[in-house]
Length: 250
Image (cartoon, rainbow, N blue to C red; front, top):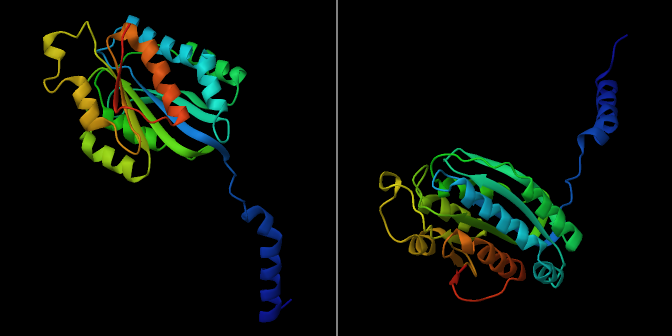
């Protein structure tokens, strides 16, 4: 049987019509939230197991605090999206709490429970630049926030991967706010592991944080971490203005 050009064209058109439902896939609508918050937690070798435990316990306690939940509920939308990953070397980042919604105390407790169950692992170097770049790739996956915030906590300067200035510039150009939580370790590592340079709080203030309303929270030792992270997240979710540097003491 011979097919005319018109017949072949009609058959081709019919095939497109039949295939259209499979080919046309609408973009998945993302849930709106007040803030997309990425928590980036340092697990380099300068942080011993006890200090690491203080970090995670501090984050979990922050999300169980009714004051934090009340701040979230007062937002224009009344919810936030949060995810947490640990970081160390330039290529060592691990998402341990996937994106989760917080709009009430029950949901906040779920996030806290997830943090309690995070495996405790320690790696080697400190790549703040790698953490920034990884954090930036996490946005726009599940939620659509009116603000996108990266919260980087650590106790050392960048010693692995690209220069922080290069990564920071790219993140800020994307409209992402970078806040910092610098932990002034009262039991520093041996001299051969200690990085030479400016005080850590000055370094985080000048080289790490950036974007509209960005700020640095300084924990005076790991014992002050829980108080510091609680105050920091409350300020982030509420979008409160304030000093560019705050300090928390045990």
